[in-house]
Length: 172
Image (cartoon, rainbow, N blue to C red):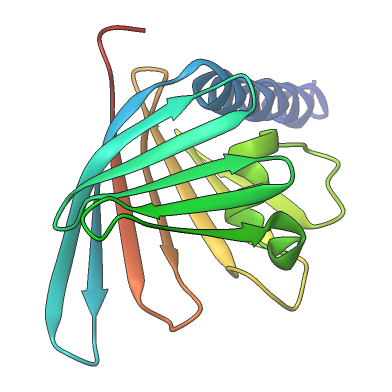
């Protein structure tokens, strides 16, 4: 009996962690979201905010920034196409320039508990994604609410804290 309680606790933890991975992957695969990104910039003592829409496509995803600027980012398996809608300018970046970017990897491919690029830790309704690479984001906190993606929190390469809040679009 003494060994049964830790075993049951471990099994419920494993089931819970697998459930969170599945919830994340389903949300990323099927989800179309409104988002609000807030960045706390310690260099300017300001909070910068942007809002927009994330839509899945057959090829990847489209991120439209509606405020404060009108921009569009199209991510697929080979490139990111960046469109400045106000200046009518388009640029393309090869995705292999970001091959060590955990955030892009998990958004395009979902989470994999056996990844060689990051490790996963779990708390109640939260996944912590810790990069095992020298580049990219060190840790990304993913929080869920009512079995939906609620927010992502991370520090970017300039050590600026970012929080992205998600709301599922009703027209899925």
